Image (cartoon, rainbow, N blue to C red; front, side):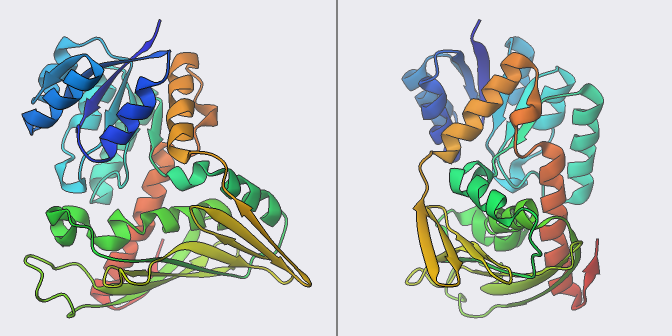
Length: 320
């Protein structure tokens, strides 16, 4: 029997997942929900299934095995809790919440109900990320430099701190998560930020740019820079330095530098397809072992990014 999948949030990134899932023989796109009914109806017309504007009504009426929650950060209310209470597997786009308290409440329910969960940290599913992990295994990691530098997304809610959490929480979270994945857990965070060059943008109150220094449990240090003021010079990725090997990751390629040698490996897979395929297989088999970012893991990344914002606001290091 195909896995019956629903969507809560039917625009933006949800459409990418819908397109991927629609090409899987073992998936049925059963229903779509969005507060903007036009988005839900458009998805239902394209992929079949029913359209809703009330997710609670959808969860009550439909027999579902999985639900994709693809919402802006501020729009998360009880969607995860209501679905988990019904035993429905969860795929959730990052970031999972805007507060630790909210995330911990959801995590407690997910773990208590033993719900299969996956969070859309797609960089983990790049095949070059797995290659990088193998190349770094067993080595003393000393320094990493990461960045998410580019332009400001056009989505109005993104530029409002109370609705997005700011660039660190909503966007650069991919690089923070990648650093955790490859370097290990974070002990201390110290961050600083600047503002003032985007005064002509209505409602803009997130940081123009920030720099966050992490001290990891391994003893390594990592600095991650964010900026949304430089569309002319995008720089997104993570570089990890060891004594005799440097590994640089972008979403497209892996660069390996060693004394007298340099190699570039292009990524060969679609990480969005991989995260969707592995999630659906986990739902079918009731075995989540292939999932690379569970809700619990995503909460640990959220703690780091929220601590960075807290460090900026308080002007001091934050211990985790």
